[in-house]
Structures are given as structure tokens and as C-alpha cells.
Image (cartoon, rainbow, N blue to C red; front, side):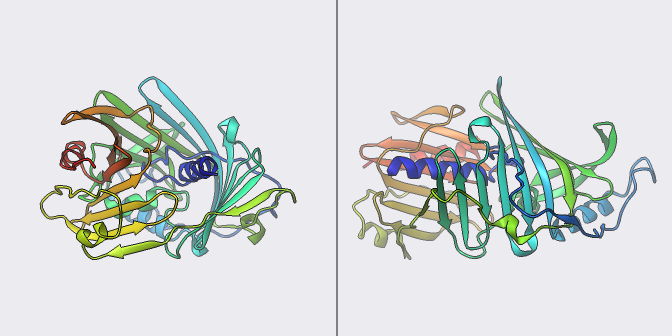
Length: 376
């Protein structure tokens, strides 16, 4: 049962990932005929700036129209294709999306990779539900209201953590687009280059490109939205599952979580060895939590008001190490560092416990924090 949960959890994280601009770990989705057809409604376009008005349109007006478009989306249907390049390795995925931000509904169907084709994910304010046809299983993950973010469009989250700058008019597939770049603020650490090409009429991003360097590895994620329809009337049936009667249904039970005002109080209520990390100046404990279950977890959350740091301690082995992980030796023990566009994480095992330090902080800072934590 544990192995099945891990497989489902990893799949769900892949389907929902939002750590990179392009949703680079997302799977992709196939369209089916299970739901009622959509009809196109009238679309109100934000104030426009034609690419033909001048060699360089008013950048401030373009950025304002872009923000207006992202904040006023009622619904859209699209095919999202993503290519992730790490060194010489290229991973391609494709997903079909039906999104209704107005009432926070999402349907995502996997087209590629082939081994996950047909997988369906539904998401709303109360739960995420994943249907795996090959495994003949449906798993529901309850979630609290207000926890649904982005809904398939990572740029909505980026707007809260970056400053958007107008670059100019740039050709994409033979047509003029407005090119913008995202300049990270203090809550989004890292050395990522983030750019988007906007349709000159709808201001919807047609392509998103994220490039970052970790050590001597270059990570590039390119996401393209195709077959896009904005302001589409999506029938409610699209956000329900139509699966065979013999499919197994299950609900993931979230373990009970207890919060504490101080780390010392948490330590008195667990058998875990919870070390005291040396956090950067200005960071303070925001939350200390202990979750019970087959795997006991202690989580410490620190923040300075803009950036966030998480420390996780749990019994058992750490999660699998991705191929792009960088091995680093800290005081005689080997840890694994994985960088992302918004920061990164460090994980390692010591005795019967696993540790993870993650957050929107530079690589060196995360490694220093990891080095300050003693083993059990």
C-alpha cells in the first residue's frame, strides 16, 4: 500500500507541479469525447497595443494589458506542450487543459508521455482526483479551500513574485508577438531567465521559456500553448469523471497535524531528532508542525516576510533522487542538491531519519543551513 501511495503522490505532484515557469514536470493530456462540447462565448480583449502602430509599442501599456488578461480569465481550453532539456537529455510532454478560473475548476488529460496517456486529473477547491486507466484506479486527495493555485497556467503565480518588463516585438512562428521578461523579486531566488511571448491581440502567453544553471548543468524548459480558446463556455460535465464501473476508488487520508509555537515544544512530542538549523538573519519561525501516521514528519517553516524556508525531518528513507541532483559533501556526509527556478532543496539521510531543506533561497545558503543541522 505504501508503494501505491507513493506512486499516486508522485504522479499528482507531477501533474500539479509549479516550481518552474513552464510547469516542466507536468504530464500532458488527451482530449476525449466524454464531456459535452464547448461553445465559444464573446471574449472581451483588454486595451490593445497593435504591433504595427510603431516599431516599439508602449511597454507599460503592454504589461498592463498582460496583467489585466491574466486577472480577468474566466475560462480557456488549450493544448500545452512542454520540452525540458537538462544537458543532453530532453523530456517532452503534452497535456490537454480545460480551465475555469472563475470557479476554480481544472481538467487535465495526458497525451504524452505514452506510458501515462489517458490519465485524467480533476482539481477544484475541495479535492484533486486522479484517474489512472492502466491501474484501473481513482484516487482523491482532499484539500482545503483556497489552496488551488495557478490552475494550469504558471504565469499567474509568477506575476506575484516578479516584475514584468517589456522587451519588444519579436517574431514567433512567423508572427509578431510581444516579448516580456520576468525579473524575480526577493521571494524568488535563483539565477533563472524567464521570458514569454504574448499574443498581440489576446495578451495570452503563447510560449514560456525558463533557463537556469545549476553547477555546470543548464536547465531549459519551453512551454507552448496551442489550439487556444479563451472565454469558452465549458459544460459542468467536463469536470466530472466517467470511468468504468469496476474501477477502484480510494481517498488519501491526510494525517492529523499538530502545530506548536516553538520548536522546543514540538521536540517534546516526538521521537524524531529535530535539529536547530542556523537560518539567515531576518528569518523567524512561522510554523512548527508534527504529522502522525505510518511516517512521522516534523516541519519547520521560516520566513523573512518575502522568502520562505522549510525544514522537514521524517523517519525512513528520503524520496528518490532525481537524475539532475548534484552530490555535495558537507562535514563528511553526502547530500543531494536539486536546483529549481525558484530556489531548490537539499536532502540526505542520517541514521533512521531523512532530512530536507528547501526554499526560495540560493544554493549556497541552502547548503549552509543543511551543514548546520546535526544528525540523530
